[in-house]
Each structure stands twice: as structure tokens, then as C-alpha cells.
Length: 123
Image 1 (cartoon, helix red, strand yellow):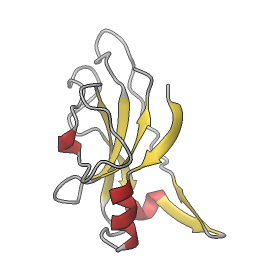
Image 2: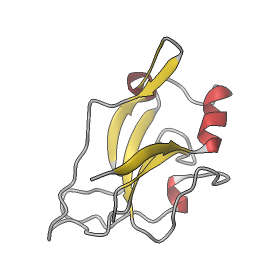
Image 3: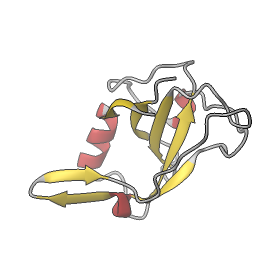
Image 4: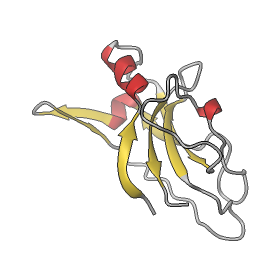
């Protein structure tokens, strides 16, 4: 279960403002262990900068697609909302990895898998 708010990386904000991503880009959610703690100010956060949990049970390397950027992002009244109808879930049991600390949302279409943000899962 998530603890706290979703944190957007500073670099992701800059990339979005510069128009660096396209509406058709595939956005994914990966699960990380506690080897490296993400921080909003990480210089160039990308999936490869962190350690994913093992690919046991229902979790596969790279995580789960949340849909396209165009499907996930909306704006109304000057407020941007990032939401996915996918709502992935992974059981924390004997068949799945049990050291999930962070959810990392990233752009899988971007060549470097640049991360958008992260959520504390409570370990």
C-alpha cells in the first residue's frame, strides 16, 4: 500500500515543459527495492538508475504499462492530472518479490527510460 504522495522528478517537469515527450509514448510503472532511494532532485532519473525487484510471480521486468502519455494526462481549469485506468497491482506473497519499496513511473518509449515520478510503497 502506498504511503504519501506521488513525487514528480524535477527533470521530468523540465522535459514535459520543453515538449520532450509525445502523447503516444508508453508510460510504465516498475517496482523497485530499497537499494537506491529516489529523490525529486535526482539529476537524470531513469529506470536503469534504480534496482527493480525480482521477476517472480506476476511481476515482469520493466513493470506494467499504464497506457500512453496522452491517455494518462489531462488538464482542466489549469490543473494537470496524471491518472491511469490500468491500476496495476502485485500481490506481496511467497510467489512474488517481497521487497517492494518504490513504484517508479517512467516513459518506456524514451530511449533512456526517463522517469516521471515515484511513490513510497512502504517496503
